Every structure is written in structure tokens, then in C-alpha cells.
Amino acid sequence: MGILVICDHDGAALGAGTLNAVTAATQIGGDIDVLVAGHNVADIAKEAAAIDGVARVLTADSAELANGLAENVAPVIAGMADSYSHIMAPATTSGKNILPRVAAMKDVAQISDIISVEDAGTFKRPIYAGNAIATVKSDEALKIITVRTTSFEAAGTSGSAAIESVDAAGDAGLSSFEKSELSSSERPELTSAGIVVSGGRGMQDGSNFGMLEKVADKLGAAVGASRAAVDAGFVPNDYQVGQTGKVVAPDLYIAVGISGAIQHLAGMKDSKVIVAINKDDEAPIFQVADYGLVADLFDAVPELETELG
Image (cartoon, rainbow, N blue to C red; front, side, top):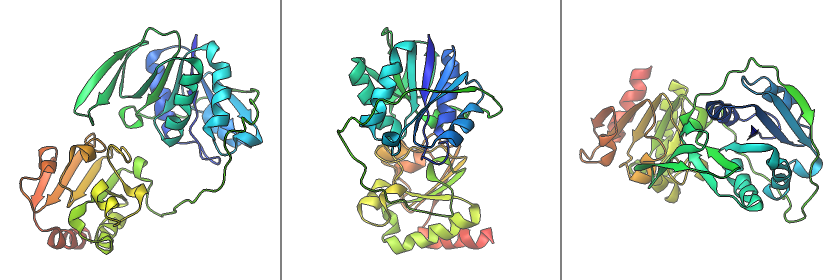
């Protein structure tokens, strides 16, 4: 049997994580279908059809699927599950919300946040905030899996898969969509940015993040933060990088005033190059940093901005 990848999207465009999940699926082997569930999703289905390695794109297009409520999307997936050996989704907010419900409906265990495919039934995933890697083997006929997107390359987009319609399951009547509040920024999205500049408790105040924003703007970077900075109210929750925030793996990660607690490292230690600025020369962040500068950030960051021109 084949593999079903659940498309991650915002109702307007394909989510980048879908490309990474398809790459993970290709490493398992077999025919790959992508499910696009939503309302007025024809354009998203066309984007999905262009993903390399995809055999079919299945669209469940109905009003009750418009906002991605797990209570309405999960029955659609569960109704299709018997035709597949694997159901996969990116480990995004959406994937983490929907797939556990599908797993419960099908009475199977979910395998979460995989970072490696060993074979069709064996996968690796981080545990203990990334301090250990577990190898998980499943003998179940149906395997339900979320994929850590930073661990797999994005699939190409030169394909031409067939697009077919499937039936929605109707409104489950268990939840309703009230509203969404979306922040907008001219900077790159945190999880897909090539460069991330993050600040921690050492920033001392939210207004001081303006220094990091100036550097980020000159580098074309996203701005992130440690949980300590978010909990202190310096920046909004969507800045948070770490075990309980967003997982990033940019080409360059600049950690400013971040001590390097294991919860934060779990969200950024796969970055290609890590630069740390901290006045404490024993800060744990220096153990994972490729380059470290022991200095007062209030001196170092303005100097960095000046050097960037």
C-alpha cells in the first residue's frame, strides 16, 4: 500500500513543511498521495501536484474544512486510512493537532517528530529535549507519523501529479472556528529563514530587541527569542525558539544574551553555523557554538550593526 501525506497550508498557499514531509515519504518508498483538505483549495492542490515524487493529489473541498479544525479534518483522513500503510504530516501546529486524533480513531500508536527513516517500519526521533535519539520500530499495519521538517530536505517542484476529489465527512459539530489573529512582518518566517538572530534574558527589556531587529534587517534575517525572553514579556510568543517553541535549522543562528538551556538548544542546535554573544564565558551556549564572543551585548551588537554597513 502507499503513503498519504497531509498537506500543510494556510488556506491560501502550500506550507513549506509539506515538501519536507514528502521527502521523508520518498525515503520509505512506495506511491505517495497528498491530501489537501480545506475550502476553495484548487490553487493549493495545483502547488501540491508539482511536488516531485507525488503520484496523486486528493482534494477534500468543503466549507467545514475551511479553517483546518482537527475535529472535521481527522474523520476525512481516518476514512481513507485503510488504503495506506503510512499517514504522514509535517510536525507543525496543524500536523500535531490533527494526526493524534486520527491515531486515536484508528487505535494505533503515533510516531512523533521523526528525524530519520531507517526503513519502512523503523524511524529515529529525539527524546529528552534532543539529548538522546530513540530508534522506534513499529509492526502495526498503519503507521501514523509526524515529520520534523528541519531534518529533511525540501522536495523539488517539477512534478505533475494527477488531481482527484474525495468526499468530506461533514461537520462533526464538536468545535467551531471563532477568529484568528495573524502577525505580519516583512522579515522572513522564523522556521524557514536562512538566518535567525535570537535574543534571551540578557536583552533585559523588550525595547532592546530593537538592536537585534536592526541587525536582522541588514542580514535579511528572522528574529527569535528564548523562552526566558518570551516569559518575561520582551517579545510575543511566536518569536520563541526551543522545545516548547519553534524548531529552526538556519544556515546561520546568532544567539545574543542566551545562556543555552537544553530546552532552547533543542530548537536550534541543528543550525549549520551557530554564533553566540554572551558576557558569561561559562554559558552553556558556547558548548554548541561554532563561534563565540565573550562580550557585553550592548557593546557588541551595535558594533556588529555598524560593521554590516
